[in-house]
Image 1 (cartoon, rainbow, N blue to C red):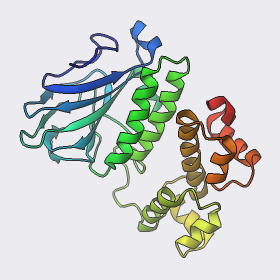
Image 2: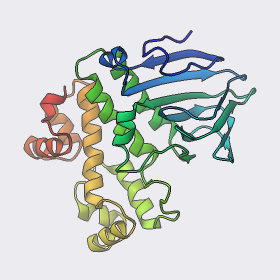
Image 3: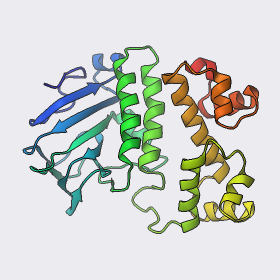
Length: 284
C-alpha cells in the first residue's frame, strides 16, 4: 500500500496503484501551504482518473506501459516518455491499458512553487510532450524522492534545484502555449551535442567546430530561436551534473571539476557559485 508521508488530503491517492513511494520535505507536511510532493506509482489495468480540475499544477511522467489521455478536448495515446500537466480549470481523463499497465512518476507543485516556473513558461496546465527520455526522468525523479525522504534541513532547497533540472529535461524548448512549433534544426542538433558531450566540450569554439559552423553563426541562430547563448547552456549542463555528483557521491571536488573539463578548481568553483549561489563545498 502507498505510504501517506505527505500532507493528508492535499493529494488524492487513486485506487489501483501499487508499490507506490511518496516524498515531501519534512517541514512542509506541518503546513497548509506545501511546496512539493513527488512520487512513483505502478498502476494496474483498472487505473483511471477523471478530473474536472485540480487545485495544483501536477506533472505526470510515464516511464513504461501504455494508456490514453484526454485533456483540453484532445486525445492522446500515452506510452513511455509521455508527460503531461493537470491543474486548475483543466479537465482531463487518464486511464491505463489493461494489457500494458503504466508506471509513472509525478510532481505536485504547491502554489508558490508552481508560480516560480512562470517566468520560463515551461510547464502549465494542459502541457503535453511525448519526447521525454524515460531513463532521464527516472534518474532525476529518484534523486528528488530520495531528497524528499531524507528529512535533512536543506531537503527543500535540494529538491528545488533537482526539479529545475528535471523540468528543463522534459521541456527544454518550451516557452508556454505560444512556443515555437519549428525550432531551427541547428539548435536541436546543438542541444543534442551538448547533452551527449557536455563533459568533453570546453569552449564555444569546440561546440561550433563539432557542428561545422562558426561561433558567430551558432549564437545568431540560438538568439533567433529565443534561446539562451549556447555556451551558457553548456556551462549550465556541466553545473547540473556537478550538483548531482556533489549531493549524491563522495567524489572529490577537484575530480568532478576535472571530469567536466575544468583545468583548475578555482574556475570550476566560480562557475558553480555563479549558477547556484554557493561554493561546491557547501552543496555537500
